[in-house]
Image 1 (cartoon, helix red, strand yellow):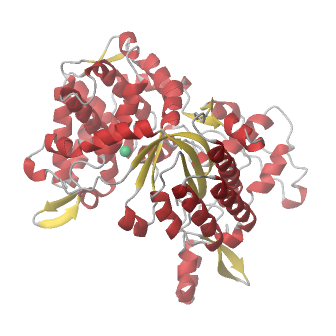
Image 2: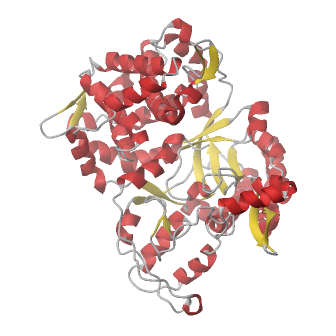
Image 3: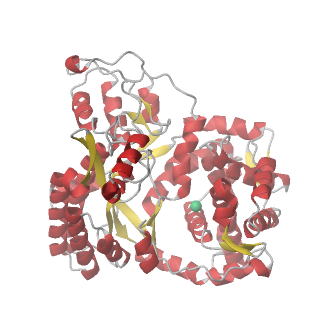
Length: 569
Ligand code: ZN
């Protein structure tokens, strides 16, 4: 799973971006296609400007030659994921890409760049609205015949129950055959790219001197050809290597028709053992942090597993689904429940992507909306620690609960409100826990001056993704609650600052209220809480308007990885 906030963000943008005028001229018919001019949205440059181009690189100076060679082959394998994913988004993409390459005119280059960012002609920041032509995005993406309906699929399975497993498989596409449907395994549908990727992974396996990496690379290469990913997911959990690589079909968000089909992607990253060790120090504190939560002891939950490893890495390259649209800074895999039962899951935090977003987005936001002394105290260290403790907080507090003698889960009781409250809880609990760890000397007290301004700038960053839809409410609720308690103040110029003396108490009260809702599985109470606190006021709306000039995300550029792929150095 991707870190939830980053998925929301896409949904949020759909809501907050005013519908834009796409070109509406009728598309050329099939015969005149090659000669037809592509209709490009006139605001393509503004769309592109939402993504700040940013070089992404990692320190490879500690890698011995064996691992550099392995890395080069891993990159070459990863590149194949782009070609597969392009087809998974839409089967017509390769042909459109060719036409785009020969397109002329002032909009052609921005359109090509925006096509690359989005892996197709649909704008991922604007609800998959087309920015080239007027074709509506097929909900089944490239996984099913475009004209196939849900009904046709379900009826086919009813009439051919033997085909059910293959048709619904994570790793097949569905095609038309002799007037009916057939499931084609990925290993066949994408054979040329998967065979080439498998060959590169085997070369990398030969080169590396790290046993766990060799094992994963070989078993993942096998999986590309057999469609059986189980063993390689297990091996990925056991990976302990300077190169931390994740490559294969994972998330199913691209399949909006059924959510069955997994999209190919890759993250090639360099492990940061000293950062992971710092995290392990925090993980040791988890039982103490649970004990310290502002809730009655009877709600405290010491049974939640905290064994799942968290790795901190620098990303060198990503490809496919991972690269499309908004960049993830954290992911949690694998999704296969059988592997999660056996081995848990692993969370990977991409430190240099956090840094890039901090520089390109968080700092400009702080400068635009915070009081100047406050903006000057925003720091990357605080942002990083707040992100870490947000992640750790998902593992603390009520999970499995008892409501009227019935054993259940917070998630099941709060239904569609769950993730809104849980994400807000993780923000607030992260701050609460950092404050506690400062009191107990685990985190340096000097970070305190950076903590609140960085948190406040982070709230604005989240609020940009839509304050008027469900998930934005959890962000706005933090603003309003803390403002009500006097911990956040806005001045006459509409600039915000925090009030240090009031902040810890307000955070504690807010967390207490959220935990109470979770521990009692109070759906009605959660709805009331979000309704009471989740409405943006005029000041907040005015502040958010100032942020239109700040990029929404980064567009990673991979000069270092490209050099490695070109020559061995
Ligand atoms: Zn989260």
